[in-house]
Length: 112
Length: 116
Image (cartoon, rainbow over all chains, first blue to last red; front, side, top):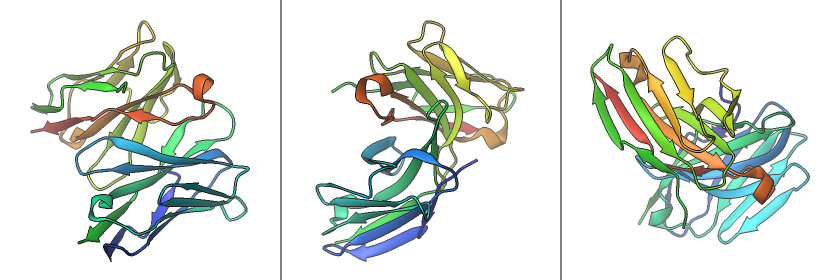
């Protein structure tokens, strides 16, 4: 079963605008990760945030984590047409095998 | 840069036939995952290996699916017999938590299976 739930399911913006995607999860986690997937391709890791971190940056990406609300957000600033893809959050649960559980994803379209 | 290799990229098979997918993870990665992704949905974990041992196969339909990683390196996922509902993308990923200190997973390009 999938743990993460992203919203919105789909997002369409203009180039240059910021895109914000949210993820909620249910259990205690070691870390939360965001991945990107171009149509028909494999997933590419974007950023990982540990459970004791609240915010992390990587280039135009900003991720926040609120463990009290069991939620995370991914912000892409100054979006480009090449950012068009599906974005997934994945949680690594605390303890055990570090199983990675993915959400259903947000499909982002950036219009030129 | 090292990559996870999967083959074939595309497979069309008739229902009730057997089908197999192969994955070669990044060298040195102890953890290997097989995911199934139905169009428009997120990846669903089928099986996770740590070296040659299965650590999670709770979502693997064991009546028709099997997976092995005999030498703890490459892996094969088999479906027998295939059903129409098995049509999906099958993704392999690997990670090495001990080396990187986190569970960042590297994915292959996937095998797109169509059952007709």
